[in-house]
Length: 419
Ligand SMILES: *Cc1c(COP(=O)(O)O)cnc(C)c1O
Image (cartoon, helix red, strand yellow):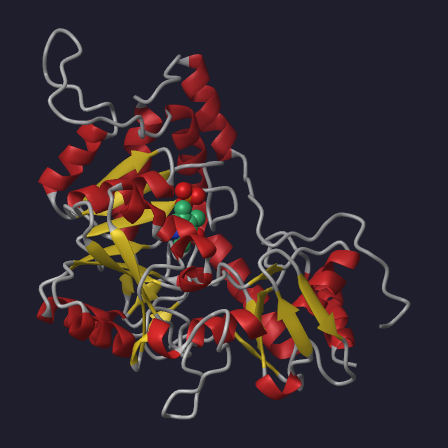
């Protein structure tokens, strides 16, 4: 490693909130007019802005994206014991709400072209579980998945799509915004997302009745009576008007953030040329990601040995090679934050008993995260794609506020790992 590189004085983050000013004005307005609860102009306006931007009929502002996904799973009518197909390489908030309702996630393996749900595996899954009626699809790191194929398969099998667009706000597939492909869709305004309210989320739908149900459920399911009257189970999931002020102030900057994130992606792509690595891929013809996180995938031949247990990792450094653990540890030494690629759900101890389907069928029968990591498919590619990407991939510092100069240094640090 080049000894001349000094650690960053201020940390370079993976993805941190980027404020602009109007957020504070809307929060102040809420304070001064005393609309400090879950009712008010900011909530109303934020919902309107979301519908306008994304192109859906109804948006319901909620406390988190996870709450929005929970409401979506309820709307889809998932019953205890019912199996639900879910994206496998995603954040666990995509699938936990299925379990809140007593549903049983069955994980669908990932494809290499967009790192999202593999339509071939989904098709196989319907052969194995023909009774499944709900599919939860995420767009990893802001890159739209293969929505035409996924929609066609779901239609054929009469399954409802819940779209988790928490990471992909502003991304489009064939010119259409993500968050509109499912019957019930979710976005998030968590602190590290492309725009933020510090927290918050929304349920998006074109069904008026669904939107009204969520408005009711998320405010404790109060009936229209002079006293607290309840006929249904309620939740305290509504967004605060203070939080909504932050989101309202952020919305006009969404496109600016996307442009910044795209510039970061392009700079990495150019700066890392010649190294045995690839950037997280997308379908250039059909989709425009929001480039939320820039990621790397190390070529198989260029991986040094790396072993991961449940809580820690070890590697053996080799000239000309590297691994996610080495790069992440090195970045951390220089005060820059990267992150491993999201560990696939089928590899998580909590979901070890759940089904997992690859493009060749029952993934549990042919691969085992703990025993047969390197199993190959009939096409000569790794059978467990999620595990392979997890093994070789990492998320790079992708903060809007990272300067071009800082990014150059990050690139130098990564280059150093392969020396
Ligand atoms: C962030 C995220 C969520 C959850 O959103 P919160 O607002 O943090 O609850 C759900 N799914 C994915 C894929 C996410 O990245």
